[in-house]
Image (cartoon, rainbow, N blue to C red; front, side, top):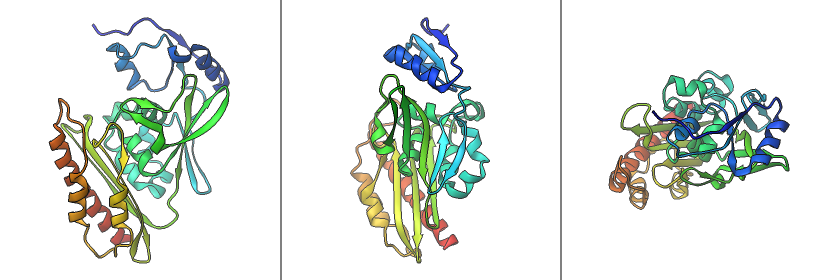
Length: 290
């Protein structure tokens, strides 16, 4: 039977109490939210925290618009994004990507803060945070700081979170002009870990692509942006097809990791296909709303 090593469970009543416990325990303490990633790792003894700090009742569950920012509390569960009107209206690519997260039970219990802190290299929410240039808000007893998503992920399961810190919110810039995009992912089975995924967001400016954001997972040890492809898209008339030759060249230069699930060559070919499809879909959707 798989079971975790011994640990102590703590149930703080306020955020300040939770932060004080995390400061006291340092590397030996971990926040516990949905537990969809942490608990399996503990059962396999890949993670052995000596203290779990349950943060589920600390009021970090709001989705709020504040001017040009959409702020999502760290404890918002994945399933809320599928019906939340702000997400659907302001960030449809985000909503599309959430459909690929695991299975209904995982979406019911998993939280955005937990997903970002876990930093699985092919998880959907880290990819979407990178796509949207999100700011990840972390707090400790020493105060609060914001870390850009592009700088937050240091590698597979490695982040910029320091001992004693926890994620309290994620802030997404809201597109200020009409925008369209697409999210496509491939795994061995629906709900499995992704072999690769691609997300594209295009802002429309007078019949052309004004700005572009393209991000992918499966190409490195964390989600990355593809600025060269973004530059190739900016300024393109919406009536033109996606630049397949540029996509093929850029995808061919990627150096994805190989593992038991897929070789590096397979992932490279898969990323080329997904980039082509996602970009073409985003361009088609942009034409529909222009």
